[in-house]
Amino acid sequence: MQNSFYREIINDHNLHPVNKHELQDANTELRGVNPSCGDDIVLRLKVEDGRITDGAFTGDGCAISQASADIMLELINGKTLEEAKHLCDIFLRMIKGDASPEQIEQLEEAGAFTDISHMPARVKCAVLGWHTLDNIIDQRIT
Amino acid sequence: MNWNDVRNDFPLIIKHPKIAYLDSAATSQRPASVIEAEQEFYVNYNANPLRGLYDLSQEATERYETARQRISEFIGAGDPAQIIFTRNSTESLNLLAYSLGATLSSGDEILVSIMEHHSNIVPWQQVCKRTGASLKFVECDEQGVITKEAFEACLTDKTRIVSMTQVSNVLGVKNDIKLFASLAHEKGALFICDGAQSVPHMPVDVADLDVDFLVFSGHKMGAPFGIGVLYGRYELLNDMQPFLTGGEMIEFVTREDATWAEVPHKFEAGTVNAAGAYGLLAAIDYYRSIGFENIVKREEELSQIAFRLLTDIPHVKLLGSKDANNHNGIFSFTVEGVHPHDIAEILNSDGVCIRAGHHCAQPLLKHLGVSSSARASLMFYNTEDEIVKLAESLKSIRRRMGYAE
Image 1 (cartoon, chains in turn brown, red):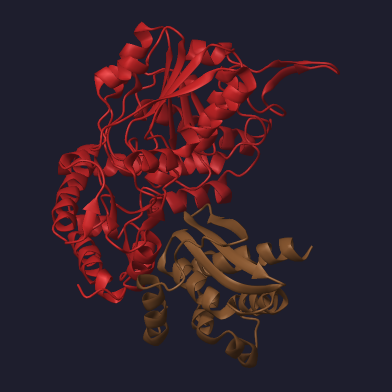
Image 2 (cartoon, one colour):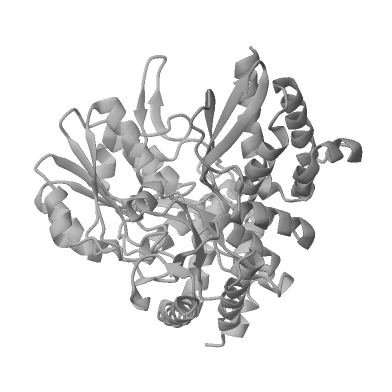
């Protein structure tokens, strides 16, 4: 993460997360863990009529895992499960260096993680929240 | 001793003059003499050892068995048959857990310390699941000290095996193995010493410590990957059942059954890593050429410097002892507000290699109330400049992570 503009976005979401808190009226939750490095989060969503109307996470981990989860929740709030799944898909492909600039634009601030594709050691941190979200959506849809 | 000359013995250090390699507790760098020895083996003596009746195979066998002999001398083991080659400490401990575990039953107890590496916990957990034996942990205090009282409180008439590390890979603290081994023996228990972090840094003598088994890895002391050692007392090894079975560890094989080869070959199934053993022999020769007293002195000096610089940095919290002498070149720390992964990444961008995470010791970190930490570890080839570089980089971390100071 050498680019200081992106570093600032990540630092800001790590130090001052908007969506890191309990969510009393959540109706779905899932834990996500990176066993090798100890990142550990619980993602909670409130889903009504197939639409995510609120979301939050708790837990602890490195700046990249925490900022990524925080930014993800900002992005998916108000989206349908299908839309959120589509964004997950773009994010995971971006991390593999496999998404177009137009697709990355749909990710808004989450596009800050595009450089992670050059940092294999941090990939697991960046995708933790997104993988957890992806698993939740798969559970809800099937 | 000219330590700059010593650095020039390490090809990787010459190739990467700007990297400060401070992760030797994970794996050490290799001197040229070891790399050349492994190549020399393949160029000059390569054949499957212990089998062939031709000269080349006998040459290979001779190197392999000479390595066994010299390793035996290196740790004061006497009869070289008491040295078994494995891949690493983990495999040595798995061998012991499997073979000794087979003699345990419900009601028996295995005692380990809370500061063990996962390799000295998980195999015993598996033994307990198979046999109904129970696994107990003796705890250390906040500074990493396991007291005689704490140890005695955990030792019972049911304790059959005690397995303990000599130096913690997280705290660097050294356990009084000689004392604990003698207490274990008074209760009739066997004592296993994990020497992975001690054998590369201090003279270890199995006769003096009076341990029943000692395990260590070659790769943490300059030898190639994939060669490790298990020392065991002959009569114990002789009574134990083999771990891996198959080629070259048998005496006679019929359609139904087999009898075992003599110790140590009973425990060395399949084609062995003879070139690795020859590389380990070269590593031991390298240690001898520098001299253990010089190595110990140098690592103590570097430890003192690291302790002083790290404890001086605001927001850096060192785990373990408040006495520099109890760190043995291993410094685990946290930086307030910065996750260890982020510490490692920023240090990497400054050319400083350290470890971050739980160091394969989750029960210890939980006991200390820390979820993960960063770790810098030293070896005699490190320099004061490298430690200064670590400290300078650490001083800038909070600012780079967006904190005001």
